Structure formats: structure tokens, C-alpha cells
Image 1: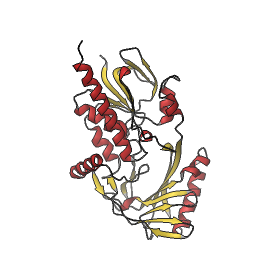
Image 2: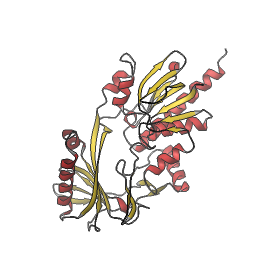
Image 3: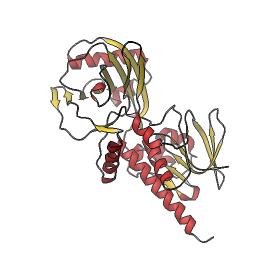
Length: 336
């Protein structure tokens, strides 16, 4: 029996859309190529025999809330215990040195960033490790082909994927093909450090404007992260683009060297891990919010359609869901 709604992509945009559709009474199933929900709201969890468990927020570092709708949602997340404000000491660094950063409310998932994705997913049916490679519309239903998995038939199809992955799935004559094709998605390298001892720095998070790095954060300064000294370093998008295919060991060496120069002291690294986000950020995100084609029950959502922030991703999913619901209601009310 066909599904009603297939949402492909379990990042914040896809989960925001899926949750709202489910709350409107639609039957929704979520698919993602990864092992868990959340997309770049991700956490690398480590189990260590000596110090116990700890983790790294190696994707999105925090988020802000500007719109009324998202502020209300964040407030509900705080009340639910899955989000807390992060009041870490923030600075910026440039050729002239360190500078304080004006404070604004910044939020993180607790006990890790991935908590938000899991909260949005809730009890919705979820199929991880499903990479979509083909989707065809027969005039009534979508036929979805996943790598090494049974095919799926659905009435509505929502793609909440990075622009290059959307391009791979669209027909070249699709009206939104060019929009997606022209979206340049930038990569970002992340280095995760488990340090043998606490590092004495004047900041918990630092925006870096020179050299390979763009951001350095003491991950355990965030709420509910424990006391193991953990740092996440993120390389700038231009540097990551220039070295997108470089060996991971070399990338780690360059990023660690830049970090020790930033803090002005050597450090003892107990363990380290490297991750490459191939589609971390849209170079120039669109502002259309989403795309919906009611005649084919087909929609596209993502932060690259709505300003690149976590909030933009959530709003993109909400806007698309509203259009799907309105279209469905219109069809139900139309005379046969």
C-alpha cells in the first residue's frame, strides 16, 4: 500500500516539515542516508574506558532565534528540557588579536545537539541508511529507489537535501532544476580534540578570521556536556574548499597547528577525529523558503532555500508543510 508522505532527509528542515504534516493528520515516513536524524545538528559520541563517555558537536555549534514563530518553538524546547541557552565566553580573533563578542542568546541541544533532531522525529517511522538514487512520478504516485533497499511508493514526496543531491534527482527540464544547479555548497573540515588536561584560554568559543580556522570551541563549556576537556575546530570554507580532498592526517595537522598558534601554547591531545562536511553551507542561500509543486505533490525544503541558518531550515520545513496542507485541503474541498 502506498505511503501518504515520504520525507527524504532527516535534517532540521525535513524533520520540521515531517512533524507539522504529522500533526495535521498526515501519515509520514522519514528516510535518511545517515544512521540517525538531525543532519548537521550532529554529535559524535565516544565511549572511553578511562574517562567514560563524552561527545562533540561537530556540525552546527549553536543556533539563534529571531522570528516570533521560531522563538516560540525554542521556548517549548527549553520547557521540554532538550534545549538550554549557552553562555560561554565568546571572542573573535583577527590580525590585531582577540576581541570580545557582543552577547546574544545562543542555544544548544542538551545533552547534545542531536537531541533536537530526535525530539522532532519523535515516534515518526524512520528508515536510516536509505540513500535515494531515483524518484519517478507516474501521474499519481512517486516511485522511490533506494540503494540496496526495497522500492517505496508514496503520494507526496518531500526532498530535504543539499542542493547538489537535489540536482542529481531532478529531471533536467524540471522548473526548479536550474535554481538548485546554481547553488554552490561549501565544504567544511572539523577537527575534534579530546585533550589530556584542561586548556587555559580567555574564551570558550572564538570566531577566527585569519588562517585555516573559522571557529574554535570548548565543547564541554556547553550545558550538560560533562567535564572531559573537548574542543571542536572548524576550518573556514575557503580553506576547506582549497583542501577538500586533502589527506585527513594532513588536515588535522594544519588545523591543530593553527589552534596552538591561536591560544599561544602547546597542548596534549589524547585522541582526535576528523570529519568533512561536503555540503556545509550555501555560498549564497536563496530566500524563497521552499519549493512546492502541487500538481505532482512534490516539495523541496532546506536551509539553502532560506538563509542557511538552523532557524532558516526549520522555517523552510514549516513553510513547505503549510503549502502541502493547504493543497491537500483544497483538493478535499474541490467538487469531484
